[in-house]
Image (cartoon, rainbow over all chains, first blue to last red):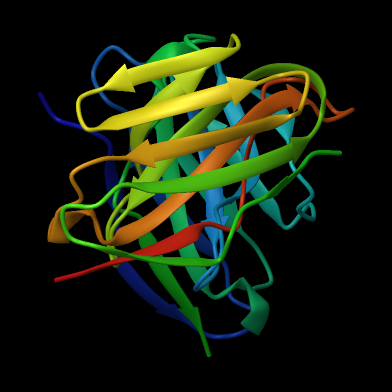
Length: 114
Length: 113
């Protein structure tokens, strides 16, 4: 049973560019959450998608946007990249409101902005 | 908003028991979770507490006291492979909604021989 798949694994972009990160959730999961994790820090919530709608958004600027497709996969888009956007971006999938089962995380996309 | 406090580092001896504490501040508490993350790896779900008391899963146990806004993760019979970062995470009402799972900054556990 495949877990959460994220692509690409690593990415180097130039300041000002745009990037799209992709996530395929674990089979059976319908909810996708995106997190940003800086080195040595805990994951920071970006937003959550359910039924192709943004369900909740964290404290991130509008440069961060996302999408969920009918097959539950999701994309994270970041526009006008800043050096401070360099981080590990994690996708987590879950079954709606089933907290007891927890989130399943992908291995992440390591984004470096130069 | 929501906030969590946990120790930044803990060191323990192989075979021993270690407790990692977590205090939180949130509105509309729904539950406290624990995740493990090895260096360069993905966070993996360990446990979840919605009600007061102790939940046991093999060598790992997690405790919650909602009145004290406090929980802990207990790791028994420590093994070298338990060296990792451990995050507590809370779901509550952030003011913008109640779906967000907020993570602490993590506790780096080092298990020594």
